[in-house]
Length: 271
Image 1 (cartoon, rainbow, N blue to C red):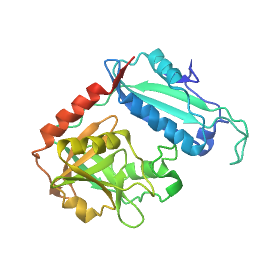
Image 2 (image 1 turned 135 degrees about the horizontal axis):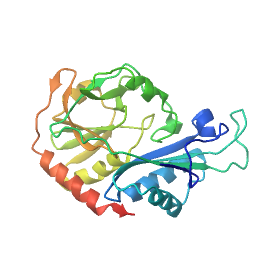
Image 3 (image 1 turned 90 degrees about the vertical axis):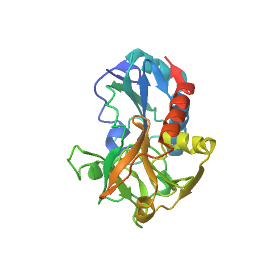
Image 4 (image 1 turned 120 degrees about the vertical axis):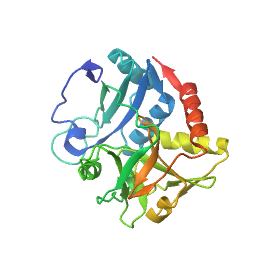
C-alpha cells in the first residue's frame, strides 16, 4: 500500500519535481512488530535534508499518521518528500507545495551472521559539497554501481571518490575498526550520512572505542581488523570478504551487537 499526500495512490503527476529532476529527499527505516526503529533520528534527518534543499518538511504527526494508516507491523517504510509540482524548467515556482509519499514493503531477510561478501565498484561517487550527506533523490550513480554485478553471493559494492578515497557502499555506510579506533569515511564532499552511521559513531565511545572521520584509502580499509556495513534496514553487518581478503569473527562482535540491540529497543517509537 502507498499513500500520496495521505491518500492511497500508486502514481504521481508528471509535474512532480521529484519525477522531473530528482528534486526531493527520502528516508528508509525498519518497522518491526509495529515499532519504528530510531524514528526520532530518522525524522530529524528528514527535516535536516529538506531544510538543506529549501523544502518544507512534513510535520512529524502527519507522517506518523500516514505510517499508521499503512498498518505496517513488520515492514520497510520509505518516505519521499519532493518540492512539489511545476512546469518544465529548473526554476521552481515561488509557492510550491511539497508532495509526500509513504509506502511499506516486506522486510528483507537478515544478512548472514558470519558476514557478507563485498566488492569494489568501478563507478565513482560524485563530488558535490552542497549535497554531501543528504539523502536526496538523485541516486543514478548508485544505480550504475549496483548494475556492475549480478552475483547473488555479493551483498554490496564499495564506492571511491574521484581521488580514490573510500566513500560508502551502494546502499550502506562503512565502518572500519583498527585496534580500538573506529574509522568511517568523511562525507564532506559526497555520500549519504545515514542514521545507523550516526548511531554507531555515538555508541562507539561507550564501548571503549575512539571514533575518527577521515579520508580512508582502500589500503587502510584492507588493513582494518574488522569492517562493518550499516544502514537502517540491515542494521550492522560484518564484512567477511573483500577483494580476496577474509575477516573472521572479532572479539567485539558480540558486545557491539548487544549494544545495538539495546539502542534499538530504547529508540523505538510504537505506532
